[in-house]
Length: 307
Ligand code: AMP
Image (cartoon, rainbow, N blue to C red):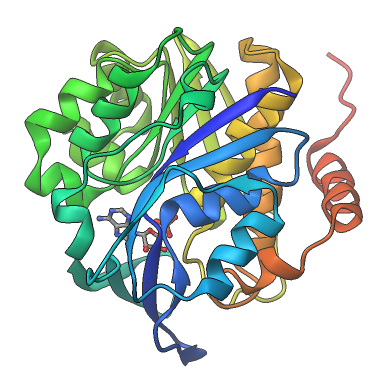
């Protein structure tokens, strides 16, 4: 089985949406990526850090999905990364209310020996120096490196972020962040500028408006499934990235053609994530639902015009 190495936060989140409010629940970029990638036939491991305030029940959930957590450091007496956010009525935008790095502030990641030859490395959202350090520890060149990040790191660690962006094959970011990173409003110009920063493939996530993947002059679009109900978009971007990376790891084909399928897989999994609060929907999701919704994606976009 092919190996996927995942880096990112494992966190407590407190979320407010127009439909309700949660106390501290399980969250974090690596958590969502890992749960999403677990729908593919891959061996995956998370490199991250938590405090000893993190419930065993959450760790059990990760291991029950066959996620190796030997690279998940537990700091004695430490507090787990905490993020809190409030969504606006359109659910497409949100304000971060609080980010407490806690144990993440001094984290020195250690890649498990077994994963130093991982096929694909998914650098999820966390400090860009941690993302770089993980790349430094790889003993063989991964077939593909994918990086996800957010405005928080553009605001507080831009030089370090630009250094790691230079080293990866694919970047996945949302539209607002692509604009912030490139200084361009047009997403086509933004993608072209981000190409010059290093990544050969630029994926721009547009929430309920789908996702675009750019490669040189080529572009492909995956819609988001029109859903009757969206409760909480938290983690949708990470779930998308986990589906993208998980599918490519399983299929061993990293051509642009196959990346088109990968962004459909990512969009498909993300469409489930938003249906309940936090990780709830990803936890009760089963594979048959995933496959049947892929069919809906196909019908949504298939047409037969004679040219
Ligand atoms: P998404 O909605 O895909 O952007 O991901 C939300 C997840 O990202 C939440 O579970 C948070 O714990 C996590 N998160 C929020 N801010 C940060 C940050 N600055 N660095 C890393 N992870 C973060």
